[in-house]
Image (cartoon, rainbow, N blue to C red; front, top):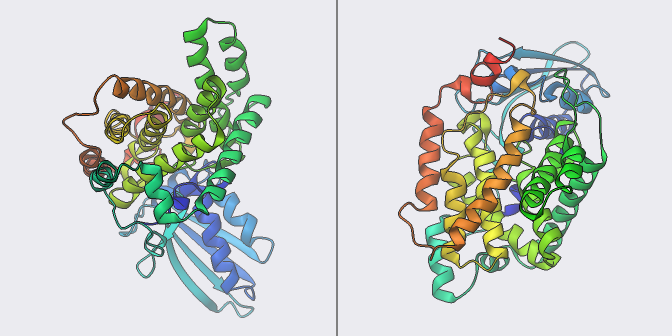
Length: 400
C-alpha cells in the first residue's frame, strides 16, 4: 500500500480526477514534447461528459496552450476499457507529423495510470493493506493507527501533514471570508459566511452543528471556485475532513500535534479504501468520495476523543456503510449540486458516527474491510449514468 501522501494531495479544485489529474497529465506530456507546434487532446467517457463543468479543458489548456496551439475533442459516449476517465494526448511538428501519442487515465485523487504504469503501484510503503490486519497489530502491540503510519512513512510524514493541515485551515478561513456567486452558470451564492453568522446566534447544540456546516461549506465553495484545497480523499469531498477537524480544534482546543495524528489515522483508512476499491466518482460513484471522506473524518474524530482501535474502526465503518450506493450525478457537471451540501451533511454524520461508536465497546458485526468490498461491488453494479457522467439522477431531473 502506498503513502498517505497520495490521499492528501494539495492543489486547486474543483475535481481531483477531472482537474488535478488532467493538468498533471498535460504537464508530463509537455515535458516530453516541448518542441511540438500543435497538440490535440481527446477526452473520453466521464471526463468528456462533465469536463467543462469540472474545468478539465481549462486545466489542460493552462499547461499546453502557452507552448503551442491546442485543440480539445470531446467523446462522452466512448468509454475506454481501462477506466472511465480516459485521455489521449497527441503532439505534432511543423510538418504536421505526429511526434507522440499517449493514452492515460485519471483514476481518482489526481492519480494517473494506464496499461504500462500506475502511480498507485510505484511506492509501496505499507506491508499491511487491510484494517483487520492493522487493527490486530495495534491491539497486539498496544500502538495506535497513527503510530503504524509513522513506523511505515518515517518521521518526515509529520512535516507533510503539517502542510496539509495548514492548507485545510486556510481553505476554511478563505471560504468563510469570501462571498458572491460560484462560477459555472447555476447562479449559486456562497453560503458559508451566512451559516457561520446564523450559527453563532443559537444555543450550544445547534450552534455546534451550524458551525460544522459553515466550515464544510467554506472549503467546498473554495473548491468549486478553483481555490487551493487538499484532497481528502478527493476534491469533490474535500470539505468533510477540514470541517470536522477545524470544528474540534475550535471547540475542544485540541493541539495541532493531536490533529496531525488524527490526519494520519484518517489517511490510513482512506488508503485502504483506495487500495482495495476506489475513491473515484467515475468508477464507484460518490460513495467512494463523500462516503470515504465521512469514514476518514469519523475515524479521526474517534481517535481525538480517545477511541480504542476497535472504536475508531467502528466509527469509520459507519461513515462508509451509511453512504453505500451514493450516486455521483452532478448538475451541469459542476461540483456544486449536490456536492457542496453533501460535504456538510457528511461532516455532521462523521461526528454522529464518532458519538455512536464511543457509546459502544467497538464490537460490531460488519467490518470496515467488508464494507469496502461491498462498496467496490456496488460501484461496479451502478449504471454509468450515475457515475460522474451527469446523464442521470439529479443531473437529469434538474430544471424539468
